[in-house]
Amino acid sequence: MLPEEQKKIINEIKQLFDNAEKVSKSMETVIFEDEAGLDVTVINQLRYVGQHLLRYFSDPDLPIEELEKAKRHAQRALYDAHDCRAQFAINEIEGFEQDCRNRYGYILEVFPEYTDMLGLRDETLDFIAASADSRENYYDRLMEYASKLEKFVRKLPHIRFQINAKIELAQKAEQEEKEKEKKGKIWDLMSKTIIAIVSAIIGVIATYYFRGE
Image (cartoon, rainbow, N blue to C red; front, side, top):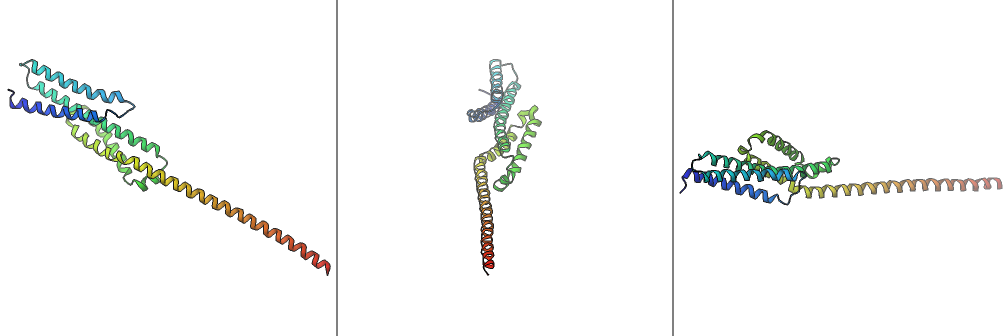
């Protein structure tokens, strides 16, 4: 029977392993430009977990630190899995930013949290860069960042629809205004032409009338 300290660490490893696997599976259908790199990091860390566990249970003389190594790799695997989530969300946000780069006024009208979203993206990227060398200590923080980013990303399809609808209405109103202006110019030209014709007719009649006298 395993000592309580060993049981505790093994249970922690199992929970971390299961969570990393769960997050990774949730991202299996997501396509990235750098798809392979994001997936391999998680797989490698989980592979290292298995290696350390096998070493520990196959050699009774190994210290419990071998289990601690397995735990750190499980923590890194979970960090990398959440990094995968965060990178996907950031990719979606940057795609939205690029698509709507000339529609800032419309964005703020329908999505006042837009600047907050960009700020969170930048903060997340800074956090990932700062925590890269000690990932096992920050997997829970990165999970929070990824979850917040995903909340914004879920809103983007509806926001795109609203922006496109507003643009369509604005273009329609602009076209109607142009048509109205065009018709106004035509009526103005017609009025001036009619006035000129009438004036000419009156002038001819007046000329003949005064000659007759």
